[in-house]
Length: 320
Length: 257
Image (cartoon, rainbow over all chains, first blue to last red; front, side, top):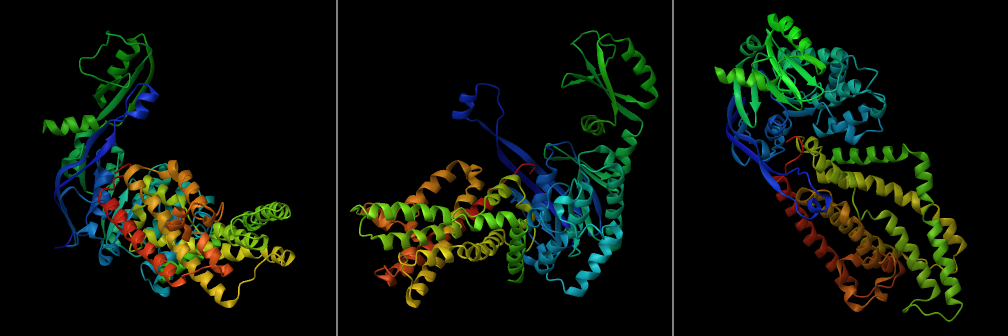
């Protein structure tokens, strides 16, 4: 059975309740709640597919990737990747996947004060890659990612973008068929992000690898592959063509209005209120008129126009 | 196995990356040893008694106990707990590479280096105080090394157990200091364990510094039973470690998943 098959998957965990109150009271008595990180999801991914897994913070994206990579045990349900059950961590399975995050990764832990090439040598032994192939792969990746100069410098001396590149090379040295990328472009500038998105597409097409990439930025939807899975509160809200979501959001913007003080005199019929800000979701052709109305409000101290929020998209999808 | 040898070599390179730290750390034993030497010289010159110890035996005891204290990794590595809590353990678990063996060999690499680097400055010290030092014969040296191996592995298992409790109760730093007191006192670093009440002479912690030190001094009795006891502790605590690891992974959750 090739590809990724996820069936009726659940994962919950105990989390400390954040309470306001006295320090001493919280010190002696702590309350916990059960958070459903993954709440009964089903999906399949074909071999060679590139899938974007999007959702707001806390949607369960990272939990899902960690379960796919065999790091976390599911509470209930089943995952099979090429027939392997991930949490059993068979050597053959582990040799064929990689789990990469845009934050601190394997090399940063192992060789922070040394050059990445030292860490690559360790990875060569971990994945039993012969010397000739190893050299060819290093050349291949450094060439595509323009990283030849970077792999011989101590990791701690590299910028975040440079470090992401050398970490990425390390996680792909064994040419895995399943690549699980958790917010791989987080913290990078626009140019570096674009380069990485192009690289992921190139790797997917050339190696026929299966890529699952998470992001909590709706703007990344353009880069995440044709298929998008939208996760919210541990449930799949949408699983389908990227274009369908794109259609729903392409003519819309979210306007956030910050007020100096609360007021009941708000000239809009439909709006949300979040963190002391008024949230409006408007069509592009309504922006001018909306801005005029905002200008007529007395206590506005800041406005921000952004892409539509996840909450808005989720609501739009539920309408369907 | 090659991957773990590589881990050892990486750790040696990392240690040498900080040359001044290496130089400073390698001399840190000489100062407390000098302190103990002058203290006991003064005390023994004034009709002082300290259990069954004479000036030369207590001098030699502290030499070995303090040397072992600097090279036996009783706490394992603190970033082990960090990597569990922060979720960085994922990068190990998603590879055909053992998290525990990684730390075992990483620490072993550092230890090999520290054995050499810490012992070198002690050579002029021993030569200077050669009248006080009981030089081991070949048999005592081998017995000492055997008990050092037991001590080393037991210490790592204790340290790993402590670190793996992160799976269950969060970072264990709060009780690191308690553990430090226990092994310092009951392990034989602060005072020889045979000075303490009899009960404390039967605890596993004495295998950390006390028994290997006595081994190097040729002052051990019932060596076969001690060897058996040492290995039995390794098996028992090794099994506890195994259970903590297996169950810890099953119940593991981490920030951001």
